[in-house]
Image (tube, rainbow, N blue to C red; front, side, top):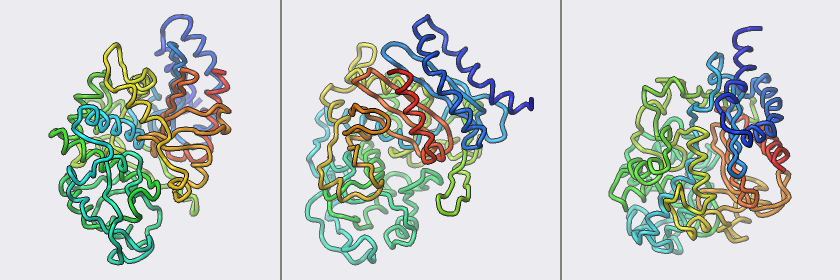
Length: 421
């Protein structure tokens, strides 16, 4: 057996040994064992070099892994491997905003221009594909709630030919994939963003991503702290999330997963999404810590955050968020009209809604006939769900977006539900 094949095969055993604990977790470990073969098959097909996953059912926790931590590498995936979690950052960012709402420093329906004056007196494109100077006045101000629900009228596009997208790129705002990161500090980023019109009227439709970028700046302005300092002080440190941050320090780079590929669905060409090790965009502290996709984390760290939400905002007897904030964060906040106007994820809103930083299932789907789970994905190849009805948390981490779009993620979730049913 070749050395790399040995490590791919043995990664699961190493992760299983790391679980430990009493008989009940071992029973859960046996239940999720069937997931390993399917994930190992995808590793063998070079969909991703390796993966780590965690399932928590009630008080039982089981962890497993396959493969290696980098393309052509030999280091096995481990329970404490650090991953770029991309858009799984969004839930953490929304939690930070809600903490400021609970303190009375923000009001959900207040115009956000009170704290982000760059968003005052907005103009709106007459047509999304029209010139950036062909605009009409905004019919109302953008509110804090609009940022949380992604209904501010500005979001991620996948068409580089659109004038507004060319303007975003020219300003280096990085409103899409997290890498390369924007070179602009938050205030300069806001100044540049304020020169652009909105794509649609505020409140008209759901548009992905930008709301979380603005939330991060909002937390900074309202709290008087750098966004990353607020997240550490109020969320990651109280939860004991020791490996969750906006960059990987030098002493942890040996545990940092290498980055996989994104396969273009049309051309089938593969693009490396980030460099590895010290060359990674996440190996140094960013100028603009992204509330949309800037965090790195581990399965155990994110479990702690997810469990806090499942417990109604409480961690080990300490309340971080109110029960009402958690309920609002994890329920569908969109109107049927806002969903109907959104075309970003075709078919998504047939069975899903959007809360604050998380998607929520609103109807039976191929994963579960009982709606109500919530969570989100990260574009580098990570995914998370909480299912309050089953007292279930599950997290899977790879570093290849192909896992999300090849059917691998959906098959994995079906496997989780089959295991714990």
